[in-house]
Length: 227
Image 1: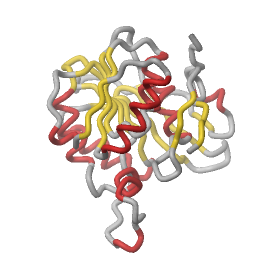
Image 2: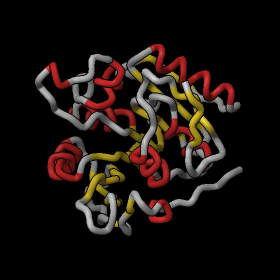
Image 3: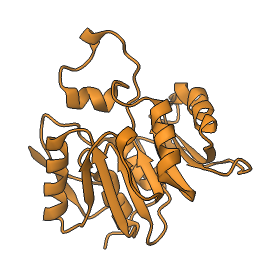
Image 4: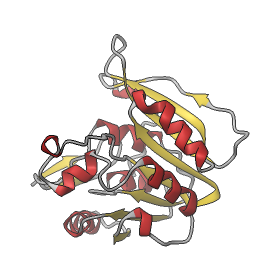
């Protein structure tokens, strides 16, 4: 286990070697998500809770994280307690999660549709983070629609080559893109990640923000508020 600093916050998080670690997509989404003061925030697949630290730094009021695995939640709880943050944590699949609606929902979901078992990580925790074995886009957007306030926001990071299907499934469940940011490894490379904020308003006009480059953290957007 090692202690890793979460860029853009004042916090460091212990990350066991056998659990999924936060990465540049996590930071991009944490900086991208639009948190209003006193928001209630749900992080689906919270893992070590990194996105909730960004939400707290942006002055969210109520923080909630869910994950499939008890030891993952135990690690997140340990980190929140040592950082003096109050967070509601639940071991559950989002498909079964019941709660009053949230102002903001965030998720860094599994991206891959791999069918061949030999290509998947033997760790159930790492498989759940990377492959749609426990959560596909249909279930994700269906659950978000149920758990999001009518005037709420849903922010996600995803693969650029899947953007068409992402927008199609979102619209199927009454969620429409309001903001988008595209991230590149560098100015000479193809897009590596997309960040999208969805709302329930079908008449919303999409704003595409300035691009982000992984080799230039200043391009990520929000610079952070160290309290």
